[in-house]
Length: 253
Figure (spheres, rainbow, N blue to C red):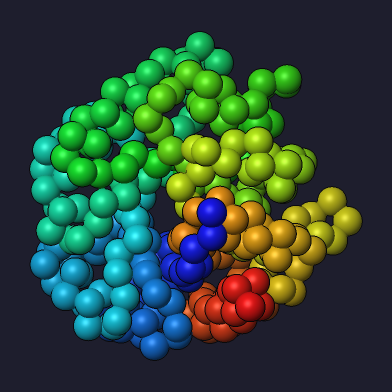
């Protein structure tokens, strides 16, 4: 399966600008060349105003990161807001548990929520970091999530899998049927230190990840940067948009 790849930005990457001027920042992101944005908080704005800003910038909302507790405790109002925002991808941005058994209980909760969301036309997607595969020796909790749930999909953060020492492409290929989106970022390695850096300035095989996405129906590639030694966040987001769109152009030729 092949499809057109799209570049999105997780707005956490430009968090300070979003706090200061959210609507103006969304407009600026649209001018960078992104096709969509992924929210991580709404900075006091209404769903209507955010949706209008995204439309005016020539983009769509490709997802929202929403904590599991909020979904459990306030599901109806949360989904009403997301519907007004124009979003259908509800992404749980990580879970922390002290034991594998506690994780498995959370996975059951996620699966129940996923069914409830599907009834209203939403996808429930889980976003990983590195701890899911590094905390308990011999247990890949993300793999367990694909086995213990039927309805939960994944937004795989390729950086964090690589950070945890996983062969990312092999993992993606083995779990392709559960992957809805990819977080794309690059990694610089200096000695034992690993850092999130601007796309194509690090060591990760981004072309391999994009090729996987194109051939497995994963259309959204979402930039998220978490360290800024090279450039300030807004400048880094602009450079990432250029790099990702160039990568997409090369892959789709």
